[in-house]
Length: 382
Ligand SMILES: *Cc1c(COP(=O)(O)O)cnc(C)c1O
Image (cartoon, rainbow, N blue to C red; front, side, top):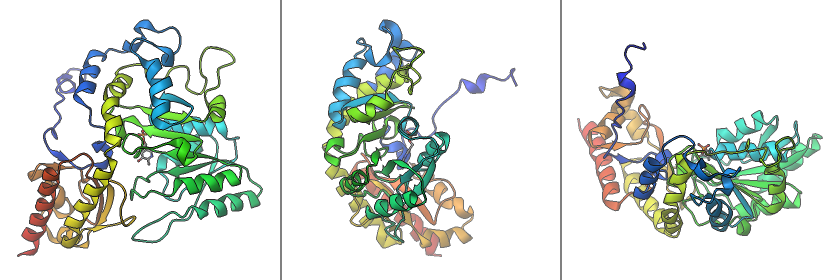
């Protein structure tokens, strides 16, 4: 093995230049400034040239001002720190705020990382009910009932989680209402904004949430893994508490989190990210337009209607039927799209799949619409 190491150095990305509709990837594409920053700061521990003991206090590059001024204003919350991703932020908050053995209440559409974070933090999870197809909605009142149910079993609830939007259907639950319900029951609410922080104009204060989490590589045009974790002053006291043994380090973050180019990419993209959140309504409009273009082919949008996010889940019996007899079977769709330089629907999926229209031009989206129409026509004509 060690005599054939060349392959590890030839790392061309084959999807370069393609139209990418993968929801996971749309919001993480770097700005030219961020790409430059990554190259400049690629060496390990590069940001520590002028460190005085805490990563978030570094003034050159201007991490201190980014973390303590820009990000709190952007999220409209008291304190923010950088994490390695949304999941690490969720874990840190759960680990810090919840008593071991207690129960976290999450929405029924919560991401698997919420479940894992709870498990690792030694917590149980109870999820609120989800409405039926095709909308799969979460009713804020579900928090009321679920928290009461858990408490009536004699268990403690210290934290609730709302996935905003969820990563499957792109549904946006009324977060204000959920926050009110949770606060009436004396439970803090964490908003998982992996798909919203960096896309939508959000105010944690307006929504009334106590903790907010974002994913840099998913929605903030950053080279990951990186995320943001914001908290109200009260929650921040606990989450960002200092170590007893090494008093100048924040314990929950193990001292320092991002120690290299990732945070520079987030900073360099930040002006663009701030601007793009102001154009969110156009993105929603475009997503709705795209869905309306492909639904007539028998590719049907699931989740909320009208839809309020670029992340969209579709079901298609037409594509599924084709896959039963197509030469490449269920891989036909992936191959046909690849021929047209369109990537992002997982290989092998036909009956249901997710895609995103985020920051794609109408022209590129028209190419996707035309491609799907052509593919379906060519397989159903025979
Ligand atoms: C992608 C995603 C995550 C995980 O984000 P990371 O930053 O990779 O940890 C968590 N929650 C939701 C809803 C997601 O879509």
